Each structure stands twice: as C-alpha cells, then as structure tokens.
Amino acid sequence: MNIENTEAAIEAVLFTMGQSVPLEKLSAAVGQDKETTRKIISNLCTKYDDENRGIQIIELDGSYQMTTKPEYYDVLIAVASQPRKYVLTDVLLETLSIVAYKQPITRAEIEKIRGVSCEHAVNKLIEYSLIEEVGRMDAPGRPILFGTTEEFLRAFGVTSLKELPAISDEMIAKFKEEAELEISKDDDEIEGQMTLDI
Picture: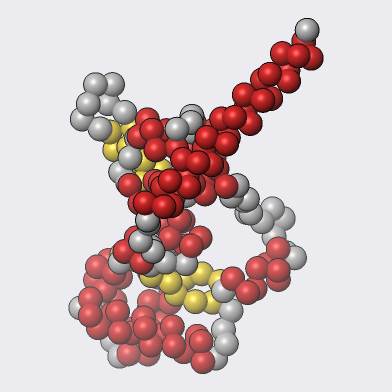
C-alpha cells in the first residue's frame, strides 16, 4: 500500500469509527509500523491545515480521532437538532480540576479537599462525560475511583494529562476558600428559610 492509499485508509477508519482509535490498532489496520503511521497522520494534519479543511485529526493519549474544527461550531448547530453544549460552573471546574490532578480519586477524597459535599458536581461531570468510574479502591466499602475521560482531553484541547499545567498550593488553598464561601452561603439560605417558616 503506497502513502496515498495509506492516508486514504487512515481517513476511512477514523471517519467510520467516529471515536478515537489507538495508534497500535490503526497501524495494524493499514499495515504500517507505529512510527510510520504517526508520521502519515502528522502529514494529514498538515494537509488539512494548509487546505483550510473543516476537519482535523486530534491525538488523545496515544489514540487518534477525526473531528470537525471548533471554529465551525456555529455552522454545525444550524443543522443539528440538539447540539451538545454544557456549562461548567466554578464548582464543577474546581471538582474537575481535583479529579484531573489527583486521579484516581474517590468522592470522599474530593470532599476532603473541597471541604463540602460534591455528589451533585460529580454526577454532573459524569453526565457530561468529563469523568468516569475507573475502578474501585481496595478499602472497606470498596469506594468508586474516578478519573478523567477522552472527552475531557477533547474539551480542554490537550493530547494527554502530561500537558496540564502544574497546580500550586495556592490554587488548592483557593479551592478550600471558595468551598468555605459555598458553605456559608448554604447556611445563610437555610437560615433565611427557617425565618420564613416561622
């Protein structure tokens, strides 16, 4: 199979799968070694950029996926009946950051860092496919361990967790401070409800 045919075969596989394909499987499918396949994909990416195509190939932790370019989102929603869009609040972002940097992590460990309950935030992040169950801790009750997903990598435009910026002690302190504000706000709301009930 010559280079042009190999490029076409890679495009066919990635387009048809619609999700990420590990480099190992992709190289086996097109009959090339992993390094050659990686170079061919890199050349395809350059071609798409040079020709200003509406598609791109992205790397996600050693796997590859064909996607549309973000700048064409407005065009897509003009024909999509229910485009997928979600809003990440500060609480969700903080919880997601903790999972990203401390994974695998249990809900109890997240709550220990934030200082407040995070059941709603964890459930929302699972609903958005940004985190998922990655196993169980070998401890009493076998609590669920959470980690980030490929959707997380896609959403934040990184190819692997190694590309995430380093997190500082100041950032952890800020999370705790904002969680304390969250607690005091909840307490004020409860107090207000009690006053109204009286």
